[in-house]
View (spheres, rainbow, N blue to C red):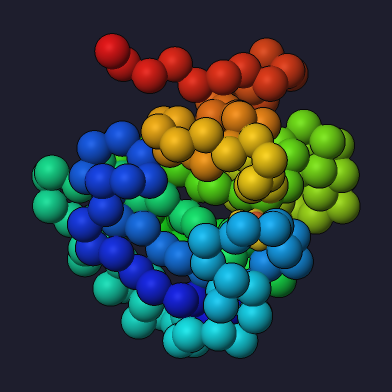
Length: 175
Ligand code: SF4
């Protein structure tokens, strides 16, 4: 896997102060995508054991609430194996920090009904993810100022509640 960027301090892609990992590779090709250079799976740097250690170090301070995975597309199958290594380590070392992921796939149709039936990696990966913002960016449904998303079709999903309830359950923000 390759990645385009790691932000040590990010307040734009989830609650609180977070670390963000922008992975490379995305086949959705949404019109108006904010990050087209990351469509290429070979864009940026190689993701290695050292990258994982670097991210864990960035996540160490108490003020870091968690990590956000975005891209590119974290849920392209090509990216899932390496992300799994990362999130396993995060859960071991920081069990109380949250893991958010953005995806252009739809949580129920593409991830649960399709990928989880095909790939063990997907099943394990979503078992560690707290919140997923799903769906392709749709420029015709773009609204400025939406909380952590770009278009109104996208949903902010509480992944663990959804798995427990066996239906899509939206994340409730603390007000
Ligand atoms: S899913 Fe995200 S990275 Fe991929 S094309 Fe759409 S907006 Fe761009």
